[in-house]
Length: 212
Ligand SMILES: Nc1ncnc2c1ncn2[C@@H]1O[C@H](COP(=O)(O)OP(=O)(O)O)[C@@H](O)[C@H]1O
Ligand SMILES: [Mg+2]
Picture (cartoon, rainbow, N blue to C red):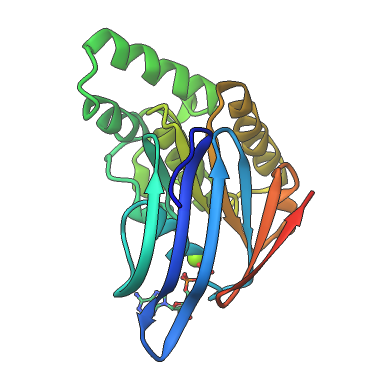
């Protein structure tokens, strides 16, 4: 088995975890279609981050299996402090764009679009260290989405947002459907996953498909 034409992610894990005594994934199989929205649901410690990291190519110390991914991956980390590297909001978004080796005009255009789309214009020159948790989370999502990834991995991306921010961010993620972007979103909150096509519940290795 491997990636078929319409698959974006193929996962076939026979065993994975941080040590042999505490295996988190055992005989875990999953394929995600191009353009599909998959929710990873589970309480803390059920392996959501471990799985997202493995999809992004960062494997836990014990890993027997195979993961194949088709397309450019963007990963929004659970903790935005681990993601934000720019001194200001603008610099942070610019950093990723400049690493794509785009020409100056395209960088400026995408930077402007991103600041506007994510309501970050007014924070443009703000020191990233002084942002609130919600603002940091919004910036982390904006910076990754500005790179136009084909597969987006979100690790509890709305946890620090208030209700209004959460709603507007979810709408932005929903709008990616038109672009055929594949989304895998992990959360401990089922409300974050209502727009997913499918939700997998992680339970220390055993998973149950829930087709919505
Ligand atoms: N770097 C690590 N070293 C050892 N154990 C870890 C490490 N990261 C996570 N774990 C353990 O692996 C399990 C799954 O963790 P994690 O993938 O972070 O779950 P979730 O994201 O669902 O909260 C937990 O029991 C956690 O304690
Ligand atoms: Mg986690």
